[in-house]
Image (cartoon, rainbow, N blue to C red):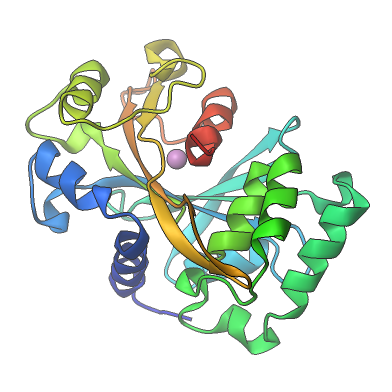
Length: 267
Ligand code: NI
């Protein structure tokens, strides 16, 4: 596992850019060509609640670089459970890790997931690169479509595996923008499609967090029976509001996150 938090995020970022070319354009638009000039509010990762690779296994990599567990979230309709982690340095991104509760899914989905997980080398899970190691399996495009019919989340995992599902710009830290409406407008003016599930803006000042996101890029995946372009990763934007004590709210809002998950839906 990494012991340097910055080294870990650099690798996660490079891996994310390799399948999310639009992220570079978003950066330029929001005020910088240098990633160091955009502070990330959080990143998110996905997994299955299989004992070999459950969310705690992913979290271990963040605990090793100084993160602490902070909140938990339930997404009943999507059959997901999530936790978020924070670093003692508030400039480090928060980390949101979710897992699909596979026992609540069909026997067919469980069998496919078990096959995928079986192909992961046990040592790979604690290796430095696990969080940006991608897939350890190769499914067919037919299997991808079967998963997609039941769980977009499971289908995404089958195609993309372990990597940052999204990075999130902290609007609070942007010099050129101070509200989410103007960020969204700049994105739309530049031709980006936003996730409109639940409205362009998820959340409100009342719940102390407003979020929006682009729709995921389409990127080619090498399935066992050939290449096909499917939704990869996306960029999110978050504006946080102060709690009564004056400190910015650092948690997540389940109802908003529920809609953000849909940023990887096929268009
Ligand atoms: Ni997010």
